[in-house]
Image (cartoon, rainbow, N blue to C red; front, side, top):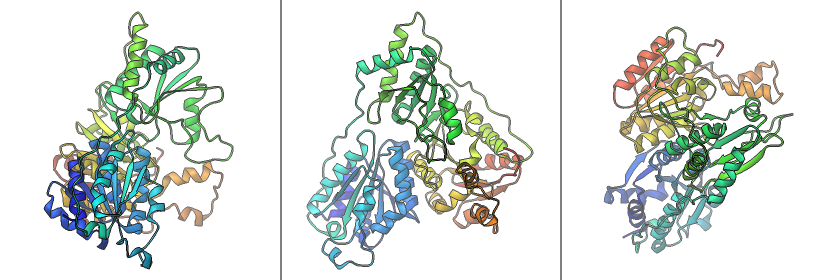
Length: 522
């Protein structure tokens, strides 16, 4: 048995049975071995950033890793942006990078590069297999590392001769580290802090954002008066009727600072201290107000959901009667009519969102009203841009659809960032994935308009504005999608968007709607 066969069989035995691939010459023995291991599903992508983003979406929804297959250092470099997002999401992911044969590296061939340095920026675990006899055991360790709490990108470098060499043997599955329990004394300290004086905020992230965790957090809020907030870009947030509304902390620094102004006790459950995405003149980098005491209930890698349940139970035991936790009531907005704006776009999504949907949100500036419009919809999951590297939405939607073939996926996608990974549509068509993509077409990198003002660099110069403008020529997403095999329609009004969403949700398979937003006040 060669190394490639041993590697793939080990991955399947360890529960990794999907591989998002964009292979090259060095990976051909891995590709050939797929015919002998039918349990491994190989999904071709046309760009490495789609492969890595799809593996991220798969891992977030499946709760276990998918693999990638990338070609040498340049292929890894093409996929790094979405590996960065996966790292920030703490997604379990096994990243396999083919390399030159061990004896060929000294020749400094044109595609030779420092894979180790590239991978170290985004990997929580890294190893290079040096012999065929080692590769299967290395793969077993990689899967265990990826799955160990809180989850990480595990990168395994596969030299070509290690792949084609004889003497490989599959390795047994290895145990991974589960989330550590939080000590009762810590729960007691947090309970004391939350029942003290002054405004309190319970700040949630990571594995606190489960249905049980959210319901427990709502019980804590009802008992203590604490406000609930979560990370600005959560990896996966359950939402909908019957669940508490947990508002993500605002992205711009001014409203984020206002969100936490006056807070005396900030309790972190699965989240880190909130900070600004960027430095801005005359604004602090940390959002924690002066005089605020920060208390850690559970750090990433600890079991935040169980800690919240223990905290809620402790507080309930000390109250004469437990207050009723607030949850969303079942309600939807009416299907909107008239002009297509960010508000009516959100209303259309809220009016028609299917039950048990997965929403992938990379709407950026166009998604301002989506959370409110969908809070009372049937239960759904919300996936967001965890690391801020745009071009995530279409690939993550692709991977989520592979992980959950019985659930509809709705990708709410900004126009500019869609172009980074537009070829994900081809993979959706090829795999017949049930993904509805709504392109929020405002013809600009609109978020940068605000950033230009915020950093104090705003000018009236046409050359500067031209770098933020996506018109001249305008992007034709209907033509792009059709050329990639995805049926598509254009909506110029709210009425048309509602009709097109009904069309897309009624038919299986991928669809795209180009929602042309009018430039009216949002």
